[in-house]
Image 1 (tube, rainbow, N blue to C red):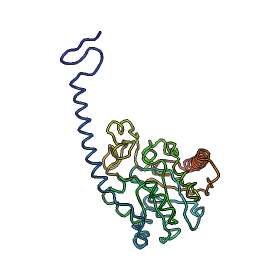
Image 2 (cartoon, rainbow, N blue to C red):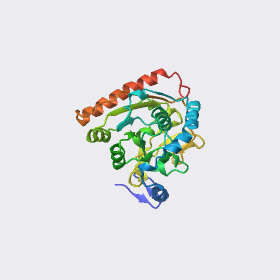
Image 3 (cartoon, rainbow, N blue to C red):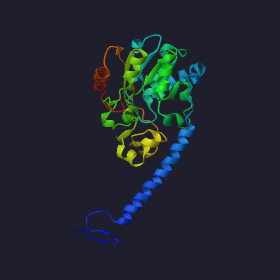
Image 4 (cartoon, one colour):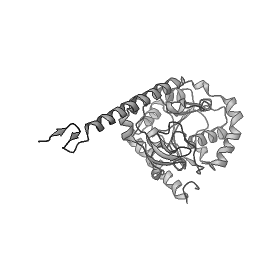
Length: 303
């Protein structure tokens, strides 16, 4: 039988004052995060595929591509594997935190190769679209990652870039940078089958070297209820500029100039495969290609 005093218990539990203090701290943090969540949701723009602006892309593309080429020494291979016209689902692995350099590099390369008039959209998390200073993403065709937006983009004949791994993959630890990790999400397979469009895998390496990603912080995300408020299952922890210790990556970071290499693979016809078989085929081919890209690198960041 255990006994207790006004200061705590003798059964190995934490003192009651400490428990109450921790509970109060968690409640306060929850209220702060909730307020941020409401403001972020308020800032998310209504999805509008027509917000993509070819004239804006034409004006800004040369200098942005030059910047990406110089800073990230960007290299994009295999763009000829993408069908020259019509709807296509581009499926990529996701790296680099909330400011994903591989997405920017690929978007610039796609627009350079196929021309700014070809419709091209990218799906992104609501939090990314609501971040200050990133309105240009919408002019390049970025819309919120919802099934409805994905279907609409394909229905109007656009090329659509999706990242099934989402926040789970983009914040994986840096030492897993050469690992494709969709977390078992298969919605992209169903989308390709339902819309009867070719599926083209896109693998990238280097993004996870733009900061030192330490942990996804899944337990922290659950503790603070981020899944309910943000649709986030992670609260990542990284070492990144200018914050040094970066928790949540809510305000982004300055990416290190890691070399970004992207490889577009040949299309995969998933129309006659069941979902599980198609998922295994796509992820296996992507992992094989990503492993090959990793073997080409001699040093982190330098490439």
